[in-house]
Image (cartoon, rainbow, N blue to C red; front, side):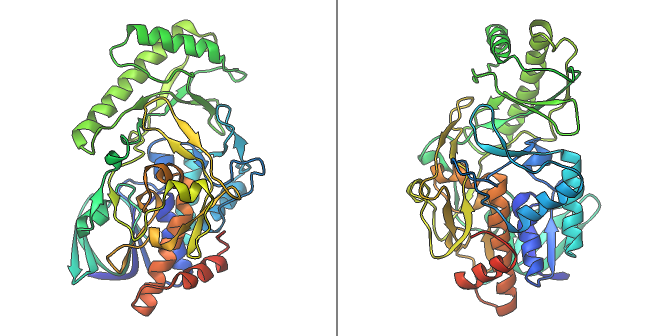
Amino acid sequence: MESFDVIVCGGGAAGIGAAVGAAQSGARVALLERYGFLGGAATNSQVLSYCGFYQCDARGDRAIGGVGYQVLLELAKLGEEIQPRRSELTGNRIILLDPEKLKYTLDQLVLSHRVELFLHTTVVDVKKQGDHLEAIDLVGLFQQRSLSGRAFVDATGNGQLARFTGLPCSLNLQEQTLQSMSLPIRLGGLAKDLTIDREAIKMAVELYNRRAVYQIPRQDGGVFMRVPNSNDWLWMIVDLGLDDVQEELVTKAEWMGRKIAHDCVEVLRAEVGGFENCHIVNTGPQIGIREAWRPEAQYTLKREDLASGRKFDSGIARAAWPMEDHSKPGKPSYHPIGGAGYGLIPLESLSTKIPNLWLAGRTIGADAAAYGSIRVMGTSFATGQAAGVAAALFAQQDEPPQSHQVIEDLKAQDALV
């Protein structure tokens, strides 16, 4: 059985942050991803914008450094624009992404740090020794294997590794309904000089709803973004509620979302000037799932922590994105971060009762409101990097590191804490 210092499950922003952060702390690292590419929601759900890299207050200071910012600098070397743009609808600062350049950049960054990359790989079981996680069983395209590790990071987004270990997991249903899912639509066949007529789009969606079985609850016309290096546009208009974490419900949402996209685009073609020749280029390998199982962390970050911009002494990452609530499909709301425009996420929100397992990205401990801030990809790079550093330090000293040790390593890696 092959052995590693740190095994990271999940190749999205959090997993990349964890793998590279652990490697930079001297660990031998394995990174596991179930798709054939890295990037998480940016590449598998077509969420082609990074949120959380910059504060959304008047100052707009950068909140994320370290591995996340390394990714942006590598994209800049490929000619990509990495300066934030203000969202037309919300005014929040986002960074637009070319999905193919992002896939390439993430491959090269991970491999340059000598991370052992396992694509097309899914966790199917775990082995424990006492209260420690010892090894994981994997299935790939062609074989089954097991890997042993000294420390582990759950960056799966859905808490899959944590659930296999028996760590208590819950849903935020006691606070509010789950965050809705989204199906971004990539549209082609549009004029190069197209200007989006939002009022015409809103009228077309209203006409669609009068005819349709499956309604679009969003009434503002949705989010339109031009895809970098392309004449295509990304349209975020399809939001679907999720009542429980069940494959049957997500399966229905997948085909229902594609049905809505197909029928609504037909209305655009007939009703909106400039859209006569538009067509669907892509709806992504999977629907965008915002929320699923929540593993139990040692501390649950709370609404009041971020509303006040609380600075924990054990803070290992900045949360700067507003607390974004999608519990009502098609009706997102935003609640600002207080204080200096960001709050600190404590190491205890990444730590678990299993001494050698850390959480990263949207699996970390947070209540329903705080979750709306910490789940975004910019912040996930930062919590992932902190989890990876903590795991690497555990592998070196065979006991959970103190927060000051993690913070020291993060600062050495140019993270902002």
